[in-house]
Image (cartoon, rainbow, N blue to C red):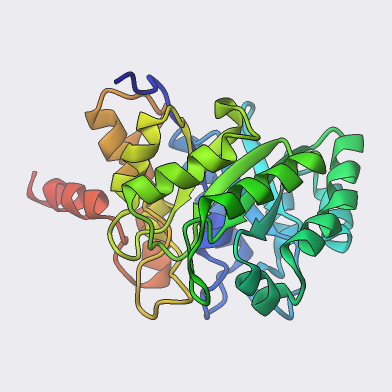
Length: 303
C-alpha cells in the first residue's frame, strides 16, 4: 500500500482550538501562538473567525490579531467567514483563504443555524463569489460527516450531497470533519470516499476529533486512501461541545510524531511545535492535551 510521502497540516488551534475558551485570551497571546506555529514550520494556520462577538466573544479581537501577525512568506493565513458580513469585515485584514462550513446532518443544520443544508450552502454562494473576485482561496468543511449528536450515524450519501453542493457554488477545497469524534477507520474512509466523488484527492482533507481516542487511527485510515492534508490543533486545543469533558481536535504534536515515525515528511520541527503548544497551555494554566508532547516534555526534564 503506497502512502503519501509528504503531508500538509493546517493548525486550527488559534481559531477552532481557542474559540470555546471561557476566559478571554488576549490578542497578543493569540499572535504569539501564530508566530510560534509558523516558526515551527506550519505553512497553513487558521487564525480567527469573523462572526458576531455576541455568539463567539473569544474571536472579537479578529482584526487586531490579523493586524498583529508578522507574515512569513509561504504561509497561508485563513479565517472563518460564514456570511457576507463576516467576509466584508475580514477583507481589509488580507486573509489568504476563507473557510465556510455546512453539516452533513439535517438535524444539526436546523438546530445550529435554523435552516436546511441546502439553504445554508446557498448562503455561502455570494461569499465564495466575492472571495473568487478578490483572488482569495476558499476552503469548505463538512461537519458531522460521520456522526451527529442529534441524528446519530450519518450516511456517506449525505457527505456526497454536501460535497456536490459545495462544489457547485465554487468551493475549491473540502475538509471532511468528524466533528464529535465518533468515527472509526472504515466509517471515516466511507465519508472521504463520498467526498472524493466530487473533489480531487489533492483538494480533500481530514478533520478528526479525538473524543473516543480514534483520531490517529482515522488519520492512518485516511492516509491509506491517499489523503495527504489534515486539520490538527496545537496542544490538542479545543473540546467537544457535545461530549462534556471530552477531548476535541487531534493534537498536531501527536499527528506529527506518528507521521515522522512513518517516514512521512511534514516540514515541521516537532521540538518547536511542542514549545508552541507549551506556550499556549501555560497561558491557559493546563497541560498540553497531547500524549506525544507530554512524553517528550518528560524526557526533556530527565535529560
